[in-house]
Length: 144
Image 1 (cartoon, helix red, strand yellow):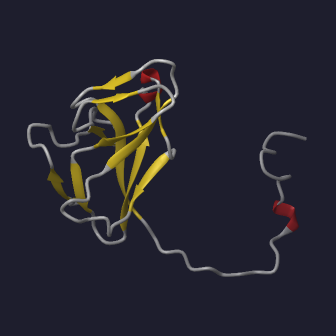
Image 2 (image 1 turned 180 degrees about the vertical axis):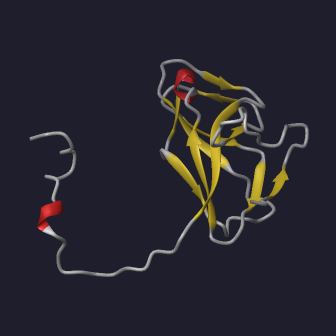
Image 3 (image 1 turned 180 degrees about the horizontal axis):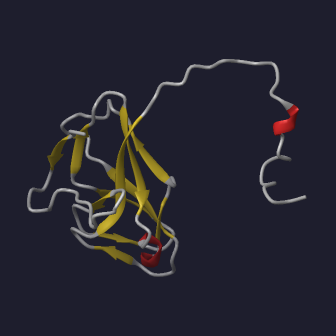
């Protein structure tokens, strides 16, 4: 899949797959940011993208982000295909859940990104589903 990318700071590398089997590309903070305890900060990720029509960007925390005392405030991020202006820099909104100030260094990898195809949903409304498929409600898997 070909994706057009703009870097805001060309001294930083393009996003890369860190291993041959990696599913996602790592994204880094463009600047150094200090985040106080119980505060939200926005980490600029140094990229603007133009993904193909019927595609979108999924941004998720790297598995090590929590070790820094940080979590993505919205769980995941979605970049729509029409978020593609020259100044539309991707950012990660992070929350410092620790009791100490966290320093995110310039070029530090903080999140990972997938570019995925999407299919438009068409609703087919029905009055009822088969009762034999009922599983017992939310959170019921494996319970009797």
